[in-house]
Length: 53
Image (tube, rainbow, N blue to C red; front, side, top):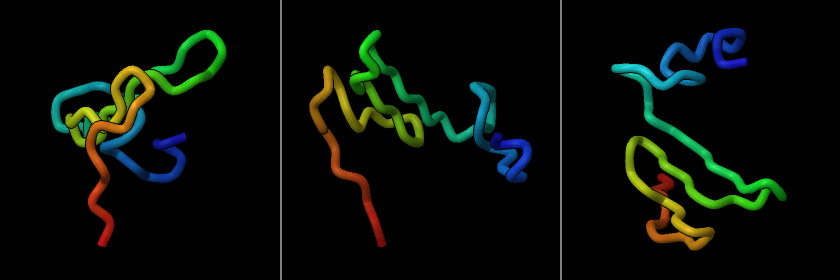
């Protein structure tokens, strides 16, 4: 999907990518979210609010 949208820094875990990761449990509940390499959600709890301009 990321390649189809020409988002070269998305859709993969590699050097130079954005380091956005979403981990869910077997019931699709959000467990962990990393955005830009920073932990935003841990154990299902928001630990850092995103900066929105």
